[in-house]
Amino acid sequence: METESSLTIDVEIERILPGGVGLAHAAGKTIFVALAAPGDRLRVAIDRQQGNVSFASIKEILEPSPVRVEPPCSYFGRCGGCDFQQMTYEAQLEAKAGMITDCLHRIARLETPPEIVVQASPKEWRYRARATWQVDRDEERIGYYERASRRVCDVADCAVLVPDLQGTLEQVRATPIEAFPAGLKHIEVVAGANGLTQGSSKHSTSSVDAGKSAAVSLAPEFAQFHTSEVSLEVGHEAYCYNAEAFFQVNQDLLAPLIASALSNAKGDFALDLYSGVGLFTLPLARSFRRVIGVEANHVASRFARRNLQQAQLASTRVVTVTVADWLQANVATLGPIDFVLLDPPRAGAESIVIKSILDLHPAHISYVSCDPATLARDLKKLFAGGYALDSIAAFDMFPQTHHVETVVRLSR
Image 1 (cartoon, one colour):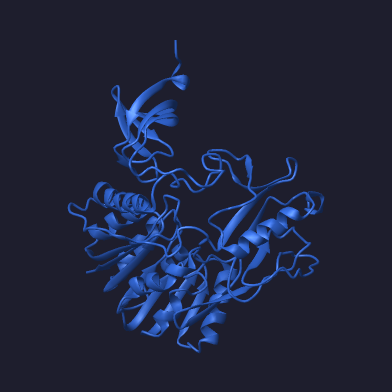
Image 2 (cartoon, rainbow, N blue to C red):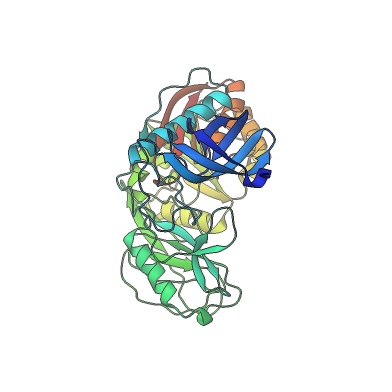
């Protein structure tokens, strides 16, 4: 007799859900299948049950979907990243559009979401200019976490890394593991356009010349390499940053992302919430008489101030504090606001942030999100607060994965 954990069942994948899993129904069960393609006929194993939903993994492909392809990466299925490699790129874009639509309808309660077309990445591979490499000193492994695990998948070649970061990965892997300090758990890497140095240390440092076009900032304990920064021009703006400050991973889509988020916005006063190193702050400062950026990460806010100074945008200031704390302290005294842009982390904006934005009554809101579900959750509150959808655009910042960047414009 099969136990629940070993039960196998034949299913057909109906569509891809938010989170990237395939949806199937069989034997009275709702089944979520990892690494599936829409239209697959599969034999799956039920791995676990959560409420009325069964989570399953593929045991056998009975009949592949017309959009299923052979994943080119040898680590596919074991490494925890790139969970869309099994689909054609066109099918990936279609699945992401469907995920956004699903969240807008099911979570945000938007009865008739507009048709969504996800703008393709110019590069389907070798696009990723930022990564976190996990280090397992005991097993001598460097790579990414395995799927649904904290075990490190030892990765020698990551097909989505830009070439300079792939070269850096090879250099790091060539470093004797005994040279890594015992406390090192992960390595943050980020690429720009102004040469390559490696490392980060709060103690002693030394530089390593390893090529051009990227920079690496390692975990603080890693004293072998030298902390550095990179720079990048996007349109007419120049940005400096390092691996301790968030910056988008797909540099080829930054210009259209900024254009969509700002459109033709202009006026007297704008807020840039979760402003990072100033990706949106700088262009906002050219269209508004006064701009305030709010960013909790002190490294990012320091770079933002420097980027503004280098651009000679003196009418804008950046404050280093959490968005929630700053809004709670200032919402009563800010006065009329023309435009609020927010670009929160994957968890979305805190409830108090959405409430504070509603209390401010800005004429226009631009919400930049990397998670359709938390975006839809926050949009539901904004809709209830009197805002209406003006436009929605989506960008494939993360090819080969289920993640997608969405820009929603709202007005009162």
